[in-house]
Length: 94
Length: 489
Image (cartoon, rainbow over all chains, first blue to last red):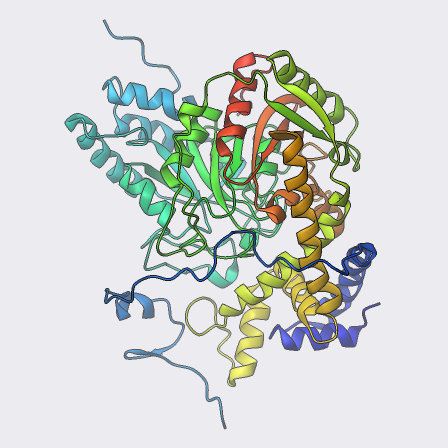
């Protein structure tokens, strides 16, 4: 029900490099899991509305106030690559 | 004349230690030193900790002792606790047991960590887990598996296996974990300790490394129910930094522990007793339920027919949310970077090289379930199933005050036993994940032993009825029907 090509396509969407061995294994494992999960189609849900979260809360807002944010140095301390006050990234457009 | 100080300080409950600390019969430095000695002695067998914070813990203990001398301490002041390594502690490595965050040092602390620190708690260390909390055995840690203190050849459960094992092995008096589909209750059951999943919205997740945001909840592991009430009290409530925290008033949880359960109606959900249970499990759990009946609770047979769809619902919704949440690990802002020459290459290789097998599997599953052409059949259908499952809980809680059921269909299994079959591993959560789908609260309390391994009783109650599950769990403890022993280490 799921092919190697499907796995490669989904991996590309997820920005996940998989080795050939991983693609092979993932094809079998995901296929098995999806077979089990497909039982969900038995459930009649024609007039049921979807639930994305269970709290009776919506549009939780706060006052727009000035407050200190994290120091730039503390945030950049974890950056794999930086340039002074910025994260350094590869060129997006070549 | 003062009472004798117990010979084994690390074996104390939090509330017993707090009594000794406030009466100055022991100091937090003594208690913390004893706990750190215990860690040094047994953790090379159990492997509960990714990081031990010995220096920091002793410094915090000294601070706590000053507060205790001044008489400004509270029930958690000077108490050594452990934190699952998905909870940010400013300035200390926080890894999610993943290569991708192996060297990540958060610049801020989680709200729950701040609250515990303000209460004067001492942090012994950061505990092991299945990478990004995805798993039921702690074998999916990128670093090493944690062992069950009751049998070192067996798993402690997961994903919060390190937090459960640390408490079971007296390497912390209590700990925090997170529960997305059973990750507190299942390891608590397998390690013979108390574990509480609070209702969705009860505890702030600010500073928790997110897995599935509509399901994740932080909660305590403790040696008894009284301690669970104390630890929940310290972390519950609204947080302006987490807009999903509920304004529902936080009650006095310890006051709920009256020992009185007469007239409470306990529902026994038929579906929780039939799904591939290990031989002997049924009898132990039903015997525990009869004990509650003998204490005055009324038993009602109930049915939650859509339980059979919960696993599929969960394994669509949780991976879908995870695939979105884990998109932030891009090798740019923090974490492992492959250093590839182009932007897309760098994303692909940093993520491909930084995430472990189970995390990749879930990202793939979630991305598939959300992808064009499949989103309606999978994700949308799962969200509708979620409505059905939640509605059934609402209905059943009109017939009873709480549900009583097994936590896990099986006791602690051997390392490697389920590792090659992801679906069998997912089945470990079959009795726990419905509560996350519905957002209700659930407690696991030790109720017996099967083949010399701990068994947990699960108590489920409506959202924000933590008092109910705590009261029932406490009444069970007080019955004296089962007294959990200690593992031999």
